[in-house]
Amino acid sequence: MVKVRFAPSPTGHLHVGNAKVALLNYLFARDQGGVFVLRIEDTDLERSDTSYEMSILDDLKWLGIRWDEGPLRQTERFEIYRSYVKDLHDEGAAYKCFCSQDELERAREASLKKGEAPRYSGVCRKLTENEVSGQEASGKPYVVRFKSLNKPITFIDSIHGAIQFPRDHVDDFIIMKHGSTPSYNFAATIDDMLMDITHVIRGADHVSNTPKQIMLFEVFGKTPPQYGHLSLLIGEDKKPLSKRQSATRVKDFREMGILPEALRNYLGTIGRSVKKESMDMKELAETFSLTSLSRTDSFFDMEKLFWFNKEYIKQTPLDDLLTYLGLPGQYSDRIAVLRENSATLNEMKGYLDIFERADMSEEGMAHLSQLAPPDSLVTAIAGFFAETVSPSVESIVNALAEGSGFKKKDLYMILRILLTGRKSGPPLKELPKLIPNDIVKARIDRYLDATRKS
Image (cartoon, rainbow, N blue to C red):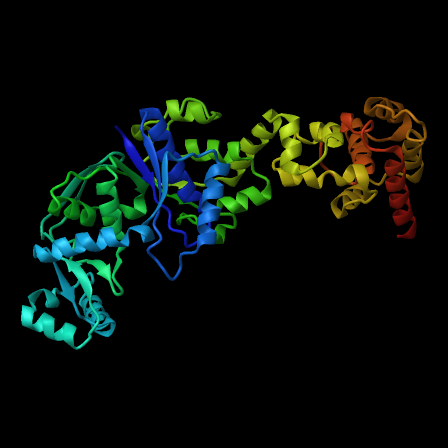
């Protein structure tokens, strides 16, 4: 049976790139009838925080990603890792290293000066049992290093095909840090092995970890999982998406008013070869395959995400939109109009002011000043809203078109700004019956007062 895992570190909120990794693992598991495991890799004791873990779980649920097993936490499995480290040490496949941080840094700088990649020299591999005992007796701290197999490693990546690492790529890497804390590569390998993970689908930034993990599988006499490394999300600077490009966390998108269906749909199709773009979770899973994924990094296009969001806002039932917005049922008529061209929930909520406040935006005022409608025309428009029954936009424009000297398109814009105080917004023809006449008249009076003072 196919078994995959998503293994975030609770050292921050869920990044949109990691959300993509989680989603694609989930889709693969659902398509294959497999198991999706959530594993919390919290071995970074200084930076890990339970509040981040809760935030990650909440974001996954918000996206509609449900795990079959977990959340399993590595900090609850330390004794397991230590027992496996002991086994490797007893078998001579690992050794204690007493090199200080200063010694390692000097060796690193020397390698860089020679133009060589920094590698651990293996000096402590040569220590005798007596020397090791002496170092321990003196209380000198140590880490445990794995004895590299010193062989080339080749594996078939599900997305990139054959990937080969030369014999000297993997040095004697640390498997147990100071304080008996397992290293990332060691804990991840032991977990993948004991949890019977069949496929490891993760970001391309983890490719360099793969030969280390394959070596550990070999030493334990186990078959490694099938690895697949996903292309990264990049920003306009062609670099991995980071905080420099503003919104990068799922939390950010939620706060700006992106619907979970929209973000999920975008992440589920970006960097994939698909026949259609708009798909629900079931369709995303049914059309998913590792071979459909691009090998090149994918540009994260905010405009494309907004397009998805607009489409889902139009499709979402009104009651659900009201719930998302935290609004009571009496707002349904307004939201029904605002949904037509709003890119986000926040944008939609921001437009509610046109129904409730008689203000006018700077942009609206500036554009109206450019069009320069005479006071007589503005007063005539105000007259249409003196009646109890609101007039239609067409009837106002048709009545004013002849003799006003303005083209109809300009009259429509003048009317839009006087009705809403804005240059753009929801469909104009729906607004007169929704904006209270007293709000319209107050907005027009405010405009006339401003022009008379200038």
